[in-house]
Length: 119
Image 1 (cartoon, helix red, strand yellow):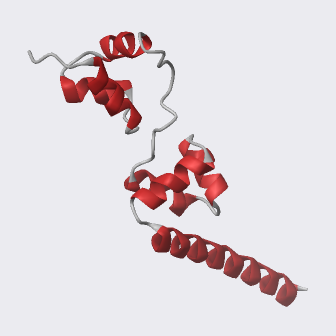
Image 2 (cartoon, rainbow, N blue to C red):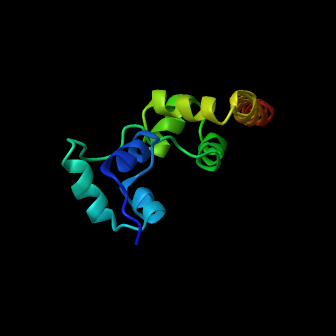
């Protein structure tokens, strides 16, 4: 088996990979990756974990704002924005939010109109 340096593990961590992802990539168990990163003061969840474009798409189809999408993904707004930047998804995200807002605005108008007709 090829030996991987701690520096290589740290570099992979800095790219936003989880310990499990790193372990799968280099052929180590997640626990062994955790132990080796811990020697360098790296513990806990990776704050650089950027959501994948697929996860971003899924979240923006369910939510109305960046804040709500970030909460759904379990990441900070800044990290979600970094993911959007990284995947160059600005226009796609904006279009999805506009579409969802318009949909719900139209539903609200239809309900209001229906109430007015009934009265």
